[in-house]
Amino acid sequence: MKQRKREEVEEQNKWDLISLIKDEKELKKKSEKVEELLEEILKYKGRITESGKTLLKFLKTNDELSRLIDLLYVYVSLKLDEDSTNTKSQETKEKIEKLIEKVEERTTFIMPELLKEPYTKIQKYIEETKELEMYSFDLEKAFRRKEHILSEEKENILTKASINLNNSSNIYYYLNNTDIKLGNIENEKGETVELTSSNYRIYIENKNREIRKNAFEKLHTFWKEHKNTVTAIYKAKLGEVEFNRDIRKYKTSIEMYLYSDKITVDVYDNLIEKVHNNLDKMYEYQELRKKLLKVEEMHMYDIYAPIIEIPEKTYTFEETQDIIKNALKPLGETYVTDLTKAFTNNWIDIYPNIGKKSGAYQWGCYDSEPRVLLNFMGTFGDVSTTAHELGHAMHSYYSNKNQEYVYSSYPIFLAEIASTVNEVLLNDYMYKKANTKEEKSYYLNELIDLIKSTVFRQTMFAEFESIMHKKYQKQEPITEKEISDTYYGLNKLYFGNNVISDELIKYEWERIPHFYTPFYVYKYATGLSSAVCIAYNILNKKEKALEKYLEFLKSGCIKYPLETLKDAGVDLISGYPVEETLKIFGEKVNELKKLMEE
Image 1 (cartoon, rainbow, N blue to C red):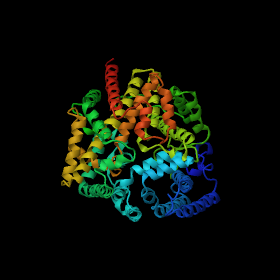
Image 2: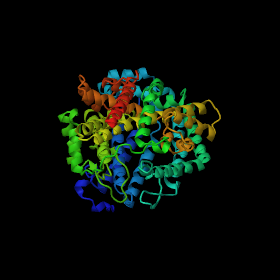
Image 3: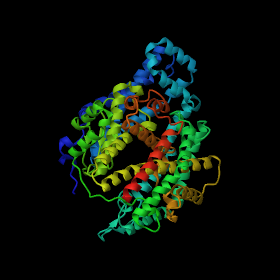
Image 4: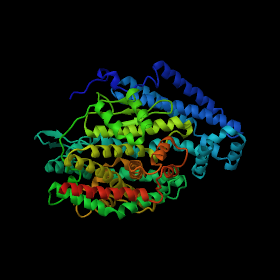
């Protein structure tokens, strides 16, 4: 289907950005206000902590500046994402980014100046100045980092140097997104088509095994041919992380990345341990896949092949709305009513158009309702994606509505929970209303695959990262062979003897962009485990499960994330949510096996 130009898309199918910023005149006025507030902030230099009243005025002014920057950046980003071919939007975003860079460079004095004071002095100010109590937890979090914050001069140097220090990520980005050339393959119609990173998934999930094999070999051969280049890029990232760890005085790099959220390294290590203890369930699932695919040997190019076939069905966006609202009824009438605002208040940009950013996301700021970008084509995957992104949107909506600005942004550690709760509830709804064995099997396998790809696979990535960063810190030799062999060994461990770990899979680590955002992927696994437990507690009508979850959605960052989760009935420190999710995984595999034997 030919894509339309942006101006050809109906207004009711676009998100509303006018309510964020009305026009160029308002954008200019708000940009000028940022400059004014920056000058106000600079007047506090050298006197932030001279009194409780001064500290309060500074914090309020800083909040006003931050809120305005958030609004401007969200607006120009959304504007560009709806049509990246719009040169005016490109220029506008670049101007705002330059403005933000200016603010960041000129305000590096704030944290060093604040933290040079003893925390007891700040606590005394909080006792004396009632309005400061609102900032007490935020200040506590800031002072936790005191020993890791450098002098103003050094922080300023690091801010300027960070652009070059992060070059490894930029170099990798262009290799992985721009310079990558995978060649051509033959599709199921016998046509010669170009294989790309974007369409690889289509061919690795193809019913035709030869097509899957060709796609797998072409992709991984590219990375094999660039193994030394990518090794150099990745070692540069390891070096950047080690530099920051050393200069900021953290014991390990993993501790540095977990520190701000007050996540213990035990949570990370326990995740890996729990998954190791349940790998038998993954092996059993791969054995079932092998049987259903009717192959003598399972290869890496078989692990994404469809094992359940149901007639293809397309959904209108109106049908999608009804499905999602019905599926999320277990979350209560108020939730569904609030969710409906997304459909009626133009939160969502629904269909693809020329120049629109691919994929899907939710974004917004404290001074606007959330916005959701979709590229809806009517598949069930699109229905699921819509439910997922609306989970994010409702989390943001409730947090912004119930918290002050300073505590409104929930941490990344908690970010995937609400979205995944929606996915699990949608899956349960579709499974229960399915009329045929094939449909029931399909939705069962969807949930199984979700847990497989998010808990098992992301934990494998997390273990790989942990090993490599430890080796670098210990100054052990890190060659391409060492990296590839480490990854290959983990792949064999996680997939077991029921799957042949083809030689080329050892180069898969090169194509994982998340390794350039260190110690991030484990959050997918802990987030999904938390979400599965919450969703099933609600479905099983566990006492106060819904009440606790709705409070979780409103909590923002008023507490450290592990405490917030514990209030929601999820104790990650114990490892129980991961164990329970993997138990559910095993039960669903057995259920699928029995269903397919009928």
